[in-house]
Structure formats: C-alpha cells, structure tokens
Image (cartoon, rainbow, N blue to C red; front, side):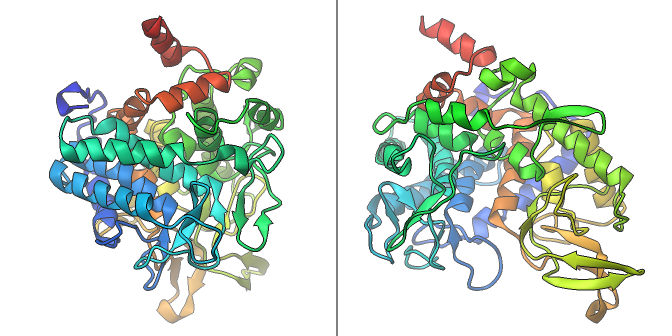
Length: 448
C-alpha cells in the first residue's frame, strides 16, 4: 500500500492537531523502549521490565502508522520490522523452560536482551495472536518488490504458518489460554463470555496450515450476555479494552456473525454502546469516587495504587494494583485510564474528543510527558508523601500506548483496517466464523 492510496477523511481542525500531537508523542514509546538487537519492545517503562510479545506486535503495526504520518522513515521502519521478524523466525522453539516459544506460539514475556522466556510466563495464545496481528499488518503493508520487503513477507508467512492452533485446542474445540513447560495446558479456555478473543479465533480459523473448526467459536459466542444498562442494550463486558482490542485490526462495521444477526447490531456498534455505558456510569457515580463524571471515565485493565485498604471520608475502600477494572459491576477502585478513552475514538468520537480536550486543557495531561497521557490515575487515592496529590502510575505500558496510536489512525484514515482487509487469513477466518455483510460481501463479489 502506498501513501497515495490512503484517504484521510476525518480532519477536524483543532481536534486533528490535538490528535496528531498525542499520536506522535505516544508513538515515541515504540522508538525508545526497544532492544536494537532483537527488536523486542518492553512491556513497560519500569527499569528491568521484560519484553511483551503483545506490545511488540503493537509496535509492528505502529511503525506503519509512523511511516504514513512522518514519524519515522520507511527505511527505518523496514529495518526495525526485519529485526523483529528475524528474531522470532530464528529463536528457539522447544519444551525447555528458557525457550522463546513452542508450537509456533511465544511466551507472554521475554527477556529484553536474550529473548528467552521471562517471569516463568505462559505460552500465551492471546498475546501470540496480537503479535501475529502486527506481523500480518506488516506483511500486507510492505508490498514492494525489493529484497527487504520480500524478506518481510517471507518471514511473516512462515511465522504465521507454523502456529499450531489445533494443538492449542488440547483435545477440545475451544482454544486454551496457554501452556507452561512442566505443567502443560492452563485450565482456562477462551470459551466463556464476551472477551478479547475475536482476534485469536479469526486467526486460528484462517490458518493455512493448522486451522480449527468453527464449532468452538460458535460455542464461545453463544455464552455472550445481552444486557440493558442505563437504558442501553449491548453484549456485556465490563473492562473497556475488551470492546477495543480485536477491533484495532478487525473492521467490524456492518459485518455480522450468528450472534450479531440474532441481536441486530454489529460489534462496532456494540463497542459504541459500551463506551456510552462507561460515561453514564461515571456521571452517576454511585460509589462517590473523585473526578468521575462527564469527562472523568475510562475503566479497563490498568495499573493502580494498591494493594491497599484505606478509610476515606468515612468509607472503607479497597484499592488494587494491576487489575481488569470494569463497569458497572466492578471491580472499581476510583482508577481512571486515559488510554482507554482514546482507544474508543472510532466508536464515539464526539464524546472521546471532548474528554480528551478536557484532560489536556483542564488537567494539563499529556503536555509535560514524553510519551503522552499517563497510563492511569486515581484522584480518590491521595499520596501523602507527594503533598496529597492524586496517585498517578509511574510507568507507561506498551499495551496502552499501542491502541492510542492505532485507534487514532483508524479514526482518521482507517489505515490498519484497510490493510487487514487485504489479508486472506483475516478474510478467510471471518468467513469461517460466519461473518458476512459489508466489506466482506464486497470482497466476495470481487472474487467471484
């Protein structure tokens, strides 16, 4: 895909400038928090942090945004992409405890220097899927007929082809969360309630080598809960990231699977409604947390001030550290995540833009920080050793930074979505999952 093929249709004047500044600052994470020898990207800015394979996948997609927005040269992006793909292509796959991966999957966390398994982490199906989404974005963006781009496509095809999704079923028809050496498969599966697993199932269904059947996907979506909250009906999931993660790469507008046809809305519309529910919850603020309201919302998986218990204004409150916070049923401890707000930009732009502008102009967020917005903050939890200021996370996280860059771009140009519409594994996976309508039908008509 060349720049001249892109159509930027959502320029908003001052809003476009605000988004451009935030996108550029946030993108810097993927330039600096990286090991130059392996290309691996750190999970977070905390010293000694291992690499996250999901953050690395985010980075591969972000480099493409960087080219189109002038944050990085095409040559530099190609160099970084080749470094990452060569590392994964050449890294050791085996049952050893310090391997990088096994059966085509990779460990959730890897040592930044050696690329070996870190923190006794699991061989993660979801994090591997996010890594693959980034790899495939690169594969279908870099279409030039030259040695470097040919090599990117070669590595990407082989990395995707060797992932043994059938093995990850562990004898059943739904995908396991992961596997550990000496332990075996984890008990949990991607088989209950609405979660971030769409990207996993689509890639597994679309595999050219080890595809799974659609029965597991059908069983999974049959467990989704249709609820009415604040007068808004939607497929329920509390943390906002669930409504965003897969749709960084999958354009779900006007495409319908069996569940969508039953409830009458697509997953894009569902995410719009989920975002509305988040704001309604904050405005109502039944638990009385500080700074909740029209511009104070964004509840998702995030860092937090705990673990701690404090009595504040006569109310005993429990605070968490890293936790998947959700609404309206919790857990909720007063922690707000600006990155989750921005990641809903394509779904509810007017609300998100006004919330962002409030954060920047009224709260002075983003302006003083090299990487953009803070990861999370908690105005209810006052830090006594910092003159009673609100708790703010000390770190930035790759899994927060990536969605900001990518969802701003999807809102402005649809770039990542358009690239993935050229990706046969995505197209085939969605067809096998039972999706039709919209852009999928247009592709099918062109093929026929």
